[in-house]
Length: 325
Ligand SMILES: Cc1cc2nc3c(=O)[nH]c(=O)nc-3n(C[C@H](O)[C@H](O)[C@H](O)COP(=O)(O)OP(=O)(O)OC[C@H]3O[C@@H](n4cnc5c(N)ncnc54)[C@H](O)[C@@H]3O)c2cc1C
Image (spheres, rainbow, N blue to C red):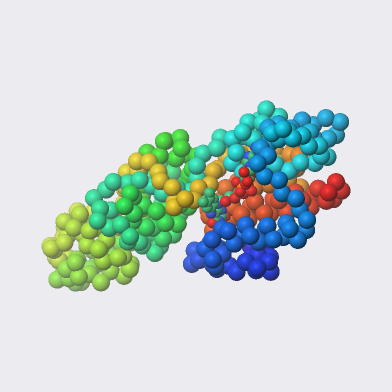
């Protein structure tokens, strides 16, 4: 989240903390703190909030919008659509001439059944690298082994960037994990040098420089049939399979899970139909967008809120310039 936003939150009574990976949360760890902050300010500035009024339709006639919500009808010179990932609104906008990028879930964890992960839930590596086998993008970050597969920022990031592709393949794909963020060839050479120089060193006692959790290291060398061997007893095939499992470990993913209760949707009003200087629609005059309704999504930790609040700020500024509010 940008510093101005954090300063704004602090100024308005929300103490924030920054996680190691740069994500920002309220110190309270509760979204209620943010809600309370906004409600306090709405009260202060006499902003009326009406709930339980679902927007059903809007029409633009005679330079005014007529908005129907349940049994109520409102008119306004400008309207802001900030309805998040609401399918109904996307349908209404599509009927009004906008293009909607197909909504698909973003930010999820991977379901994996693999011998390597069994009995290791709760273990994590601090800086892994993830990649979908058939794709180019790589992401780095902590990776957490869960009861159902893999989670953690290194997984959530790749799920977000590849959300559209992963929906296309129905969340069945091969994930390539580099547990130690090291190059395969460099690692293999390192092990061959060790075999040359320290043949008596046992793999189990190898003081690995990559800070892998001990139980994960033990599982890896067991699966590579190296648990009871020293370097002199390891053939090239052994060293290759060890270096492969550490740096290009292929894991079959069969589905997704949510990350706690968090979810974000990617998709929405396509970006080239929005004027980003004002957040006004390029298709419908005096109609503005803010937040997740447009095709922007990000990691949690403040970045989606940053999008929602920044676009709302830009839209509000533009509307004030026009002078209706
Ligand atoms: C559990 C959870 C945790 C999250 N944690 C984080 C986080 O830590 N950091 C982060 O950056 N992001 C997080 N996100 C994502 C973030 O909450 C959203 O990206 C953000 O709230 C989007 O803001 P928005 O205003 O665009 O939409 P929303 O917050 O979804 O608000 C849309 C509003 O429009 C209303 N609405 C919808 N349709 C209609 C209609 N027809 N008529 C009238 N009103 C309507 C809805 O009721 C809702 O109040 C989280 C999401 C979830 C679900």
